[in-house]
Image 1 (tube, helix red, strand yellow):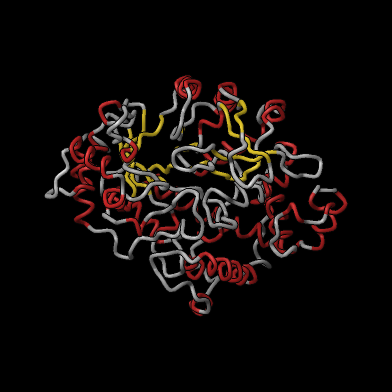
Image 2: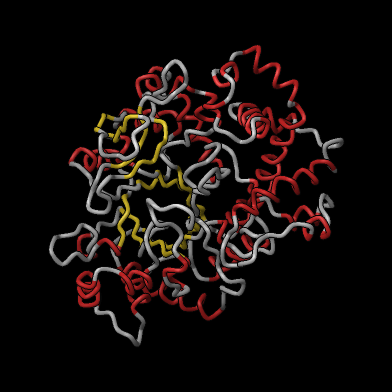
Length: 489
């Protein structure tokens, strides 16, 4: 069935407390999606963000971000007061997240809520339900705060290498802190499940995002070092990235620890099965980031300052996905297959049957044949005007390559009366792709100031937030008409 949806991360929603949450604005957005005839809400990873604020660098692949816990809901439940919320300054710009203020205020105010509930709330059932990851995550976070937030690779050796006696000592010493971090996850899961149920009731499916890698400074890497390419001192041997290309002469050095795929295979991919099962407990559909890394991945010597000295190594390939399917059944997966792809990657995508991604902004090089040109798009795909890593379409049209823009205008027959951005959106809806996803920035006609992420840059990403009154009946009607016209839903 042809369908469509909107891409907007939870952090981008309006709220009076500095960042989007799982509160009333999220419910309002679901109402808007349903009113507009949409079937999907696509978000970015929801894990707790670490240094750099990236949704793709989290302290845990299983945990939820405490920043997304809605404070107004906690006030309604009597766990916080308006005075508690007003005590903190949440930032000066309602259109940008101030992550420094989030870190400085969100944990303290959640501690206030915990102080009012810890004597009456029994977390044992929740901890048992999430026993595969929560105890390690809560201990990791308690230790991180205890050791002044430095990376676990700088912790004292007995803790860094998880010596049982040392961990037992710290579990006793930090038991109150450990319970607090379990509590933040309890609140997140409680609010998420209610929101997810509301979305399902309104026939809205949520597309989540699963980064292929975990952060080096994460509970995942610390608690399971045997699953990664670490030496005996828990120091990475190689890290992840991308080779030099036309966009970056030195490549991209991501720094994530690489998997020891042989060890994963020996365990029957047990950790990955738990990860996929957890992801599908959150989402209806999962977009797997950097899909090509399952066929082969780029390995960079640890300590290098650039990605220039890396090399390619083979990934787990089709047997990995066959194991996932055998153990978990048919799963609704989207493969992020962007970038330079080899015939082997194309074959893996074909063999899995997953839909790949088509991005219109990548289609219009006038000097080569692009697989993203609309006339080449196949139904088993998901089309985007742009992704969170692209400029907005209005920004691309203003600042992109003039030859590409001229080609796009000619090919798509863009005109000023309709608006160039709406011409892009219409082309996505018109395409053969089974699913069309449009970033909220494009529906609002926003420029480069609303860009979510610019790869290989630091300090200005992941901050975008929509204006408070961004939704309107006029916009909803326009989207609904387009949806009906091109038989989506």
